[in-house]
Amino acid sequence: MQADIQKLRDIASQVRRDIIRQVSAVNSGHPGGSLGCADFFTAMYFNILKRDSSFNMEAHDEDMFFLSNGHISPVWYSVLARSGHFPVEELNTFRKLNSRLQGHPATHEGLPGIRIASGSLGQGLSAAIGAALAKKLNGDDRHVFVLMGDGELQEGQVWEAAMFAAHHKVDNLIAVVDWNGQQIDGPNDEVISLGDLPAKWQSFGWKVCHMDGHDFDSIFHEVQEARNNTGKGQPQVILMKTIMGKGVDFMEGTHHWHGKAPNAEQTEIALSQLKETLGDY
Image (cartoon, rainbow, N blue to C red; front, side, top):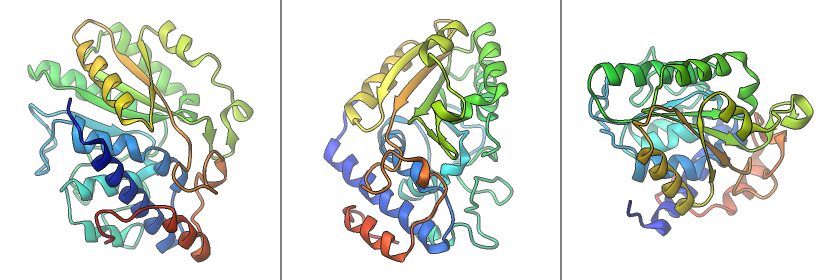
């Protein structure tokens, strides 16, 4: 898996600018987790996923990606636009009336790249399992990816789905958990501790890997390892360590920016820390 790492870093910097500009323009949205996942989304959409920007729901002979923690829509919208799914200028409509770019991803307006409405936490893994089983029935050997938040793992449906996937050997599925240790009300360990997360997934019958979500080499290596292990009768989960708010110093490592937009002065400071590389919309 070859990649120009500096080019990807430049794209990720622009994606982070897009995130800040989207949420600040409407004083609404979720910048913290979006910033933390910018490197992962950049790697996925500009190097890893086999996809067609013309987009069709079935995605035959293509990889599929599902976002379960839909509140981090700003990062997804940015990479979808920047990778050709819809015009970059449409980012100007984020969270506005009649926009296709709702605060949580929606499907009723047919936004390319979006297959399910998400953000009702705990549901994305179940949807991804269904898509993975459909690929098996269709004889399609491409893979299904789903991203979940760590706080989301407090939802019971996640573990029902985890049991189902292991029992039915859904081995073309690669789940990723954004393990930043933060959720809207505080650190995970203070809200509801997740315990020994690797051991928990292993006990549910999943193969567990670990990844640095800010290191492109780590992302490429672990995803390729996961691809190599598909078809062996076991679903896989990659526990991805990230820093919430990554790239903006006053947002990093705290839950306070989970769902809070920066004011005008804070926006200016944030943008000054992020290099404009592809041109602002």
